[in-house]
Structure formats: C-alpha cells, structure tokens
Length: 210
Image 1 (cartoon, rainbow, N blue to C red):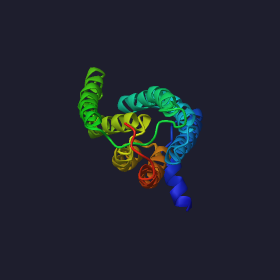
Image 2 (cartoon, one colour; image 1 turned 60 degrees about the vertical axis):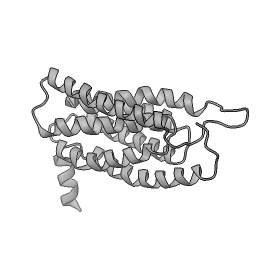
Image 3 (tube, rainbow, N blue to C red; image 1 turned 135 degrees about the vertical axis):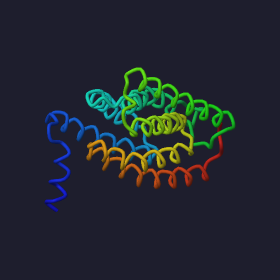
C-alpha cells in the first residue's frame, strides 16, 4: 500500500501544495456533479460549476489548453443546463429525459468536428502540438463537448459520450501526472454506466416530449 501512495505523490513533486489541494476539491465536486446527474438531481449544475471553475484555473497553470477549454465549456453549459432542466414543459412537468432527434444528431456531428478543428487551431497557435497527448486531447475535448451539450438538453445519449471520453481520459491523465484526476475519471466511468441504465429506465416510464 505504501508503494502505491509513494507512486501517487511522486507524480506531484515540484507541484505547489495549493494546486494539489485545489485539484482534490475540484475532483470532489466533480464527483458530486456526476453522481447528481445520475440521480437526475438539479444539484448536478451548482456542483459542476464549482468543479469546472477550479479546473479551468488548474489546467491553465499546467498549460493543458484543450482540457481547460472543456471545463470552460462545462461552466457555460452548466448555467444553460440549470435553466433548461428547471424549465416546465407544461404546468405540472419539468423537462424530461428524451432520446436524440435527427436534428440533435446533426448538431452533435457539427459540434464534434468543429471542436476538433477549433482545439487543434488553439494548440497550433500556442505551439502545443509537441506530444501525442495533444492529439488525443483534441479528440476527447470534442467527445466531452458533445456529451455536455446533450446532458444539458437531458438527452439519454449523453452517457455514451461520457463513457467513451472517461475511458480514454484515465490513462491520459495518469500519463500527464494528474493522478487524482485520473482516479476521478475512473469513478466517472463507473457512474456513467449506472447513469445510462438509470436514465434508460426512467425514459421508459415517461412519454417522449421533444
């Protein structure tokens, strides 16, 4: 066990203590956000806003521009999602979980391609294409952008994007040296699987309102 802890904290040699503390706090609120999302609880958004605001700063310090853009986008979409989830579709019901429409699919493809191009441009302008992680980062950023947009619109398919992106992110963050964040994404993967099952069960009990 001591070897595991030694390995974890060895990744943080030379890192300011306050950044380690901030990462831990960000991971905690990020975990809460995903857990509340699984429960279809509106607290997914305030907890998500706290987590993403912290990670925008941390990732800026580490120079991980793609990851920083993901969290900045999450911050904005959390505000939008907070509004969308609390919007009533009639006098008795709030926005329900629904499946993707053909229009949603078209927007998702456009957003995915557009995000890859935009993030690639950012990396190119700041001369950050110096590692294979930059290319993977561009890809995962696009996956998470689409996933967050679909979650804010309460679409079942958002969990599929989260699962794919989380699975890729675990080894990616371990390689980057952000161990606690890697553990967070491992937990996210597990929760996302259960989240998909819970939302799928919920959608089968309620009528589709698009």
